[in-house]
Amino acid sequence: MDFRGSHIISVKQFERQDVERVFEVANTMEPYAQRHKITKSLEGAILGNMFFEPSTRTRVSFGCAFNLLGGHVRETTDVETSSITKGESLYDTARVISGYSDVIVMRHPKANSVTEFAKASRVPVINGGDGSNEHPSQALLDLYTIEKELSSKTRQIDGMHIAMVGDLKHGRTVHSLSQLLLLYKKISFTLISPKELKMPIEIVEKLKEAGHSVIETDEMESGLNDNDTIYLTRIQEERFRTKLEADVYRGRFRLNQAIYTRNCQPNTVIMHPLPRDSREEANELDSDLNQHPNLAIFRQTDNGVLIRMALFALVLDVASKVNENTMDVSWYTGRRFD
Image 1 (cartoon, rainbow, N blue to C red):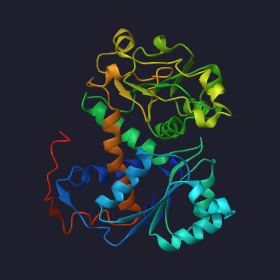
Image 2: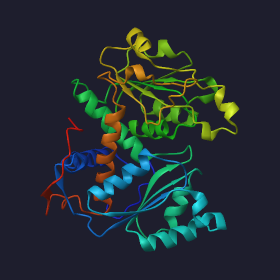
Image 3: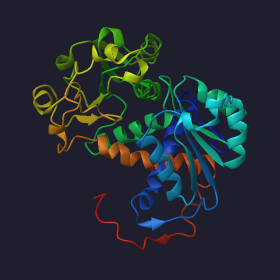
């Protein structure tokens, strides 16, 4: 894949060597993300951060990644404050905003909307999530996290066992991660969900065609046995017609310390794309696991900055220039990354 000037719309664009290239560049970003050094490789560049659906981590992570490379960020964070409410088309929005920006990140509640937007854009567009369809940067950071977590335990992605738990029908993070894992070998998937919220059949069939083992079940605890990684998701309330429909499934699959100890290997990695729903009626990932050494959810968010810095550096063709004209950080940064 030639990253220079490319849109990043779908994980289907990636071959395994492309993923490895992103990870290689992400590794070089640690001194800047961890506030040891400053780089000005994107000084003067402007990111148009266009979020037409609620977001905290993804929006701030993309903005932070761009700032850490020396760039500036301009944001739209609500459909209600944009010209879309006046009837402006995605085509017109793309033509206008791409005149103001050097790269655009876009999130939109409608599937395939970012593809439509990118066709009209004059600059590279990165998909920040389009409805229940895809979330490529999240899939990359999840896979990067899995690789780092497993390698610390002398294991690898090829041949691993992974359980995906929750709303697998609407969860774009599990859709994109599953698509990326097609590039790897002999993975065993256990897909745990209510029958009505199963992984889309076309993704399951692709996994099987790629030579992976797939078990689908609605039994939580029996499905957790013998996994290297557990990837939990929340019930995607915003994809249901009403809150009452979502409430039918909320809280059905919960992981806490007792369930983990009873069913999981001692070194099973716990992941979640966040936000986790910590309300009493949901609580899919209990706070009693917050101090567990295998809980990787906050390492995921840290890794997200590295991956998004790598994507910007590759798309804007500065990956080889990041280490030029650097300087040490002059302010107190504490020990937040220890």
